[in-house]
Image (cartoon, rainbow, N blue to C red):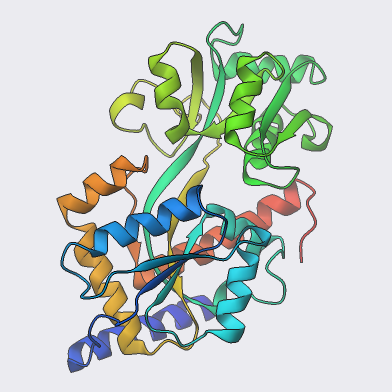
Length: 326
């Protein structure tokens, strides 16, 4: 009930601002904060909006700045505590941000402490094996994990509790195996994990759908399942989802932006209206596809509701998988 009241109040404020005709003009010094070092998903997310806003939405160019630390925690805390009212500053988020909020890695702040502007694209988990793997289907992998959990080696970027670990853990759980007892090798990132898969050091890589297209073309890997609600378009259309194979595993990695908690309603409304226009344009579709993201759009109250639901889902998952929670 409290969530519904909060969302209603936020929506009412935005609609009232729009109706009153007091939506502010485009910010004079637009900035996107990528909460990581250059390169990677957060940088990609900022570069996407930087490019999109050049198509007549801004008078001044948007700059991209970097604020690494805690997979988003440093940026989240800094914006809330020190830069809460900067109308021109948006910060990139990903599904990993929701996971970290859920397990308390953002410190004392919660998902209620910023204003969520938009989710503009998504990637999805993928269960990847080498082309010569004995696992021909997700069922083969799950049955082998159930029969001899110590012999099936999963690998991905990130340690226990990371997004990629969670994907492996969900597959292990489908096999009836305690995720903490599965064989899992952590790597610095997806590139290292893919190299390890190709070298035979791990048998399964729980990566992302956007990563595998180039490898599929070379015939080097097989994707046993995409962890999406339904089949993906384009080059991955022939790959079945885990859900259609009978396993309730969905890993959507939404990407988008938030602003500080004290940004004026009129400025927040400008961002929401601008993202609504961009997301409806074919130019944005092209820019999003060029960055390996799939269509996914939520703005304003819908984005806020989505984030809150995802954080709650991750809290439940974290408890079920034995991770430390708040």
